[in-house]
Amino acid sequence: MTRPIRRAHSIAQPIFALVIASVVAATAILFFVTFSGPPPRVPPRPLEAITAALRGLPPPPLPPEFRRFRPPGGRFRAWRIEPLETLTAAAPPAPRWREKPDALTQARIAALLHVDPRVVLAFTELSPRGGGRELFGSFTVAWRLPQGWRVVRSPALPLFTRWHLNTLIAMLVAIVALSIPAWMLSRAISRPLARLAAAADRAGTGAPLPPLPEGGREVRELAHAVSTMHARLASHAESRTAMLAAIAHDLGTPLSRLAFWVEQLPEGARDRAVADIDEMRAMIAEVLRFARHDVGRREETLVELSSLLDSLAEDMAIGGAAVEVAAGPRAVVSGDPSGLRRLFANLIGNALRYGDSAELAWRIEDGRVTITVTDHGPGIDPAQAERLFEPFVRGDPSRNRSTGGTGLGLAIVRSIAARHGGTAVLANREDAAGAVATVTLPLAR
Image (cartoon, rainbow, N blue to C red):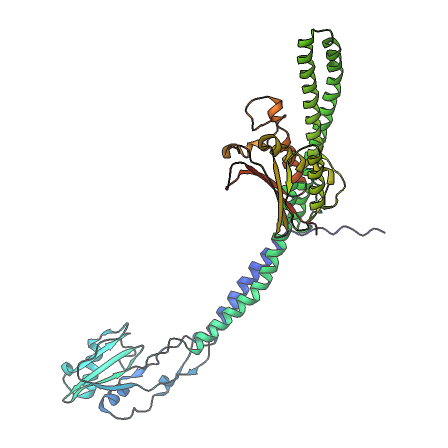
């Protein structure tokens, strides 16, 4: 009995759940802060207590309505009564932050002291409430005496209180509690998308498509679209190769007939015609080779790069080519040995064609091996460096095959490098004349 295929959920569901959880957490914090008590503030002070402090007497007992407060929706709680600040100053005091002159409070304090209001100063943050019997908020009251000003102030609140600490702790707890699922959700979304981006980047390079990730419904639909795109590109490339092979096969017969009729030409004309026919056959073979390497799907194996380069340089040196290989670290890549050999043979061939010599070196960094092929030729035009990798674009502006080939060598190089998950670039040498081709390939895991 086959198990039913579980339907994938949309990635919108966990995102929506996280948003709801955030709203609930924010509401819980607001609830906690609201019912843990109001923000710290100065309790109300009766004018009689302020007057007693100005006279240097102990404050009278507070009425019951001044000893407790009731926050909105909460129960009665006791004020934390701090003693008033009393001091003597030679000059009249200045108002503190948010305090302003209050003539009404000044007159009422003077009436309680039985003195002229001109010898009393009053600065308050809030206007008197409850018929003027008490002061809320910050205040400064002063009475001018023969020996100086006697000043009474409301106690200053600390900048950071327990209420602030409780609020900060609640916020930090909510942030930590939400950051964990938020990070897990973001990773669950970004990880398959990154794998899909890597798979889409390899589409059309001839490399096999890696296993596509599974995730939400949208991720699966995107993975299916990438897989379909990869299959279409592969089918298109294979169709192009088949078409080129058919054209090459069909051209073989007329070229053979031309070669037969060319034999009847005079010797000078015959040699030129034979050379042209050979050039056409070489160009057709080169196009076919490019197409095969562009879409080839050979089984990948582990390739020891230093051995491959040494063997290739030795084979070319036997034919009289000036090829030098600098010793480097052991580098093992995963790929097609014949394709990699073709890649570096093309680069060495270009270096020998334009610079009469080739120098090979490689290094390893960050899990990738970088191979350089350097020559001592005239170099390249930096503006044309990228176009040289396009098919049928040649560094030699003339169409003479004796100096430039068909213009497919570098296109094959980039195609093979891309199929192995690498890159290929061209640049000029910084220390001397000549060009340097750089190929970067990932090391085998």
